[in-house]
Length: 334
Image (cartoon, rainbow, N blue to C red; front, side):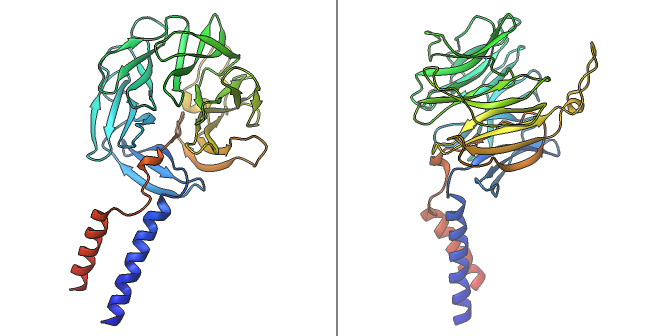
């Protein structure tokens, strides 16, 4: 009897300790496609997987979490052109928010929880930035110039940073949440990704460089357009893209892919023959404070790492979880 009680106590300590361990530090999410369905993985800053969320969603990408961590917005083209969906993590039910023959891409949930920004070509040949309520209502077009991509919100939800190209000229811009006050911050940004705001709202990280003839790296700039700094140094014909700033401000996550076959002059190759598989890294947000750290490799093209809100991470077992656990242990004891 004494040995059984000791075993029960140790089991409780181990299981509760595992919950606490899973909640330590910022957690990064990414998607892995398996058997035609997407699984969402959570990993800590050492690359250890702390949670796997199995879904019935095919072709999921571009995750963006609600501030409370109960929902995640994503894009998928399993019902035709890419559209924006929201998945309820508690009951695993998805809701389709957009329904248009044009493409709807790259959802971005505002920190105040009110809106989702995204890009779409529904009104013409180019992508524009749109904003809608989190239930898909009150759609509003925010841009009407050039080709625009990957909107990202400031921490106070008052500003949106995005990339835009006009006449083969690409740049990083900011505008208000209503699409006003458009202002250029930096030229020569990569069209393959957008930016990410620091949690204090003072800086924006983005990808910049020469695609196919050089390299693309992650840079950081002040929100007023000053103090440009290069944060990564990837090799020739390698692209670092899709930066994501951690909630605690310490890390910036990004993905890297390498060009392994250049298309012939005037010709084309399938995308999976042009690029290698992708790797997700994290690097200290303050440059020069350590080498990049690999989180996961061998992912399909264009993985877009997304940090999980701190409010979604368990800091201690809930009373319900403790009761359920104790009940199971008592049943096993019988």
